Image 1 (cartoon, rainbow, N blue to C red):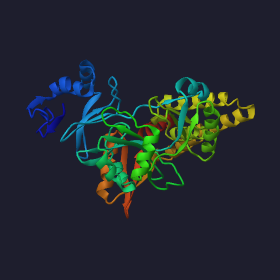
Image 2: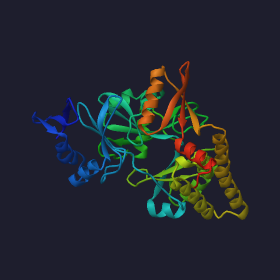
Image 3: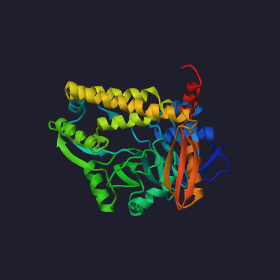
Image 4: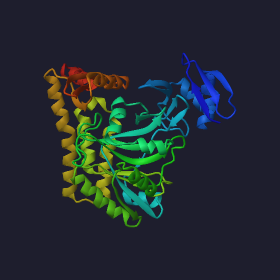
Length: 404
């Protein structure tokens, strides 16, 4: 049964119409949460009710999109899922978490079958793009509608024909480049801003298209995909992937995602030492705005990678030296910066048509709990200043003699 959603004057009631029997009825929100939503998602009623009560399912409205946002996973429904209201209910499932392998060779043997497809993992931010209420909308990993990405993605690539033919599909990809407002990284082939597609998935089921079919459809519509290095035999994969990740690291690139060509087995990711150190360097620039698990996991990756590669004492010493520099130098720089009565902050550059668009993006960041302001706007270039408040406050406190 398909359900169409009509307009209401409040979030308390919803007006539904069944397309098959043409029967209409109005239902209070508690009934929608308890009876309709579990049926739509095929999730236990008690799980939905408990998550809604705990605030893990919340009302969300942005950029003309209304719906329910899943802040945490509920049963098989991933965190970041959006149940969008409009002419009909659209379910945009959250992007599944990709597990990481620390020991490449044994993981490949026990996880995959005959072959693996090895694609580049790019350093940007995860975006899902879908057709909602006849509009192309970009959702971030957390399920939020990003106004900047929603505007920029159609400028980067023409998706109209694709969505006209495949409104049931979701484009999953990475926004990358030096004017990426979340994760800035230089790719010489991309420049300021670009997009690379790594998955095509069905809206409600979240089933992913196979690698060969995905490549065919992206080529047909002229859409940019991540680089597929090779579909390789599982026996040859460990050495080939080690060599590939080493080369990627030397080129200051992140790593690879290893996939079953049919996409019936969950993918794995494996990243370079340079990527680990880059993340540590950024995190220790703002050490009190990142959790300890963030730091710990990067160091753990380095230890297992060094072990599996059977590195020499000199190679391990070099690796340890790089980790130490990634931790201490940026942190000391920030302490000195705050000691001189400055904020621990960073500038984000975005190109927008007017000041209103820049302010709209800042409002979106504030909704996410980010302290940000429009520092300047001139000739379509906006500089957004993001303040890392926790790092600023805690360093200031310690400098005044506060105790740790």
